[in-house]
Image (cartoon, rainbow, N blue to C red; front, side, top):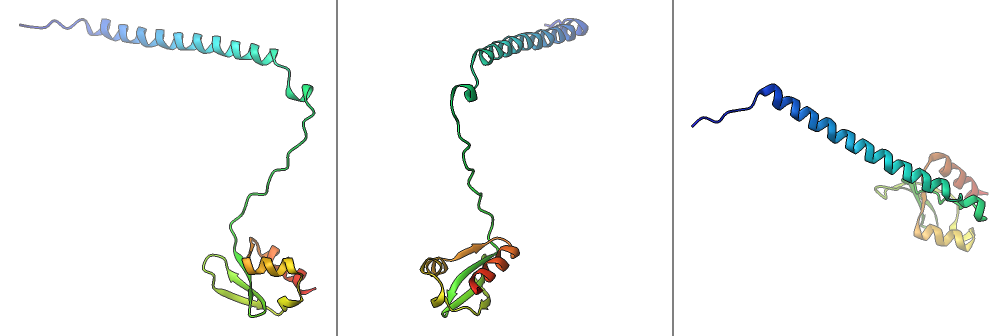
Length: 126
């Protein structure tokens, strides 16, 4: 028994028509939904007109530390942040520093740039 295949042009035309009809239906639904959303937005009063909103402070995102400072033998040690290898020692006695600085050095102070390292060395040295 032979199965008769419809005309290829007719089959191709039917598929193209179905695809076009689907895209048109999706497009009309999208336009209708967009119009409804736009209408809702227009009906809603902006928050700045109804509330006294203060700007929030955005926290500084942590950067990857390059150096880490620790107390080292009564002085300040500069360590590589990744490997914790001692790079240098600052000739400042930690006993002469304020209590908060000594506590911070015990926990470790992360330094993200060479400029920041230079500044903190100046601060500890003065």
